[in-house]
Every structure is written in C-alpha cells, then in structure tokens.
Length: 253
Image (tube, rainbow, N blue to C red; front, side, top):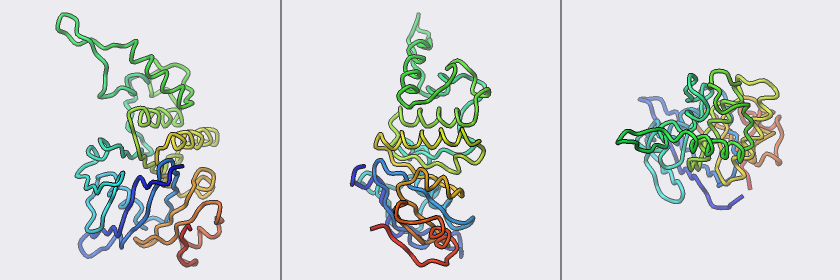
C-alpha cells in the first residue's frame, strides 16, 4: 500500500443555514487503502461523502485529490477525475445485458456506409477480460442484469469502475440487501479492487463487515472525527464507544 495520500481533507465544514453538519473534518485516504466510515444516522457521513463526490460544496476547508486542490461542481466532474459513489441501488440498466452495461456511454463502434455499428465482439471480449481480471463470476455476459443477483450486479459496477480508470470509490451501504454468500464475495471484490491501488471507502452500519475488510476505521460523530484507528489496533467495543461518545478520540499512529 502506497504512503502517498490519494485524498486529503483539511478542516472541512458544511452549514445548512444555522445547522452545522460538518465541523472541521480532517482525514487522509491512501492509495490501495480500505476505509470503513462509521457513525450513527445524522452523524455527517452522507454529507461528507457528497462533498467528496461532488454532490455538495463544502462551506470551508480544503480537499486535495492526488496532491491537487479540487472543488468538484458536480458528481460528473468528480467521476471524470476518478471518484465515484456506488449506492445500494446501483446505477445499472436492468433490461440490457452485462456487456451493454459495462460499456454504457462508452460503446465501441465502426462505420459501415457512414452508419455507426456496434463492435459487439470487441465489447464482449473486453468485458470478459475485465471480469476475469476482477475475479467476477457471471454465468453469461449476455444475461440481462435483471436476472442477476445483487452481489453479481455490485461486482459488475465495481469491475466497470476499475476498468475505466477509477481511483477512489465510495460504497454506500453496499451489502445491506445481500445474503451471507453474496456479502462474502462482495468483501473479496473490495479487497481485489484495493490491491490494484484504488482507494475504497465503505459506509456501513455493520461492524463485522468493517472489521473484515477495512485497513482503517474512521468514526464520524456530530460532524467531527470521533475516531481514526487502524482496524488491527481496536475492537468492536471501542468503535461502539467512539460512535456513542463513551470513548474519547483515538487516532491512528
């Protein structure tokens, strides 16, 4: 895992009128690092994620991405820079197959008599290669996504993100609707994504999943960082204490 910070937040605040949702958030995420972002409902996790991914502008503070200060004006701008949020309901088109979803908006074409025609074989082969490299098992790439499991759909979205040059992925409650086996495979996929040098932030309420996959746990409480610790150096009981406020701030060394 590289020591270089992929994302660095310094003193990020966000106000909605008289309400201060974030109160000076500072943290770093390294390349190839998996961060579990924990906290109660209303703690500020979603607001922070929206600022990172271009959905909201911070009131004050600085965000550095790959060493350069950035102010994303939209999720599309953040996505173009290599940052994407994958939500529980995903962004796949369910009535077309895996290949069509993989190349959505990036279709390969050639012109025949001036008419653009899809290069379906090339698209199929590139999708198959990307899925194999990601360790994603799909029975048939010609299957419509509506017939796939939640875990398979999630794997497609993550594989697509990695293939098209993603650098930081924010996973919002990625396993909430998945069964035990699908969740296990999802956790494995996250580890493979991080092994390629991509930063991963997992927003979750499930403590066991955080301890299974994360290198570091960051707890947000009342808009501040209430804990920032290496997973191997803490326990679920300590993390619960950070979430509830029963344990004072801990920071990874």
